[in-house]
Amino acid sequence: MAKTIATLLGVVFILVGIIGFVSPTFLGTHLSMTHNIVHIVSGAISLYFGLAGSLGGARMFCIVFGVVYALLGICGFLLGTGPDRMFEALAALGLHLGTMDHIVHILLGVVYLIGGLATRAAAAVDRD
Figure 1 (cartoon, one colour):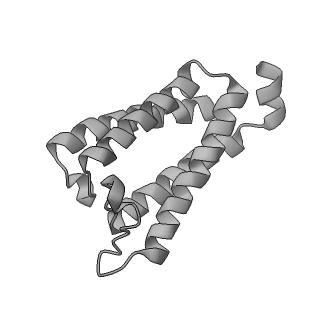
Figure 2 (cartoon, one colour):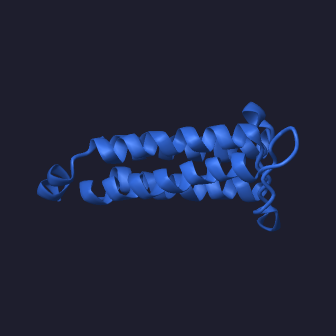
Figure 3 (tube, one colour):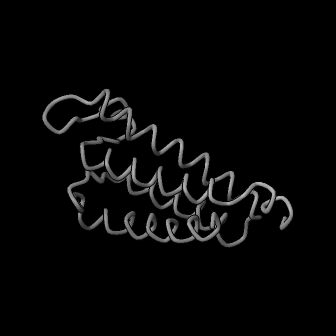
């Protein structure tokens, strides 16, 4: 399951990264050039683990990425300010994250975690 999730979300990340250059407020998010590049790079890494990486590697990637994205979304809600819960801690990098960004990050984190945790560690080791 980890390889499938990594592959599918890799494609989604790359598509959203490309769409963000044309529509910076796609689905109510705040997609800057930096944000789009992060999406494209994340998508490429995710595709690598989904298509060419080992099952164990894909499982670990999904768990780590899931934790990182879920925490980013949660921190955004907890530390964000104003009506859109803007999280400006990463503004120096060109990332301005609002409510919709936080929701999407939490959802991505949950899906990645499901993919990683639903892939049994023993099966991942046996198939590597």
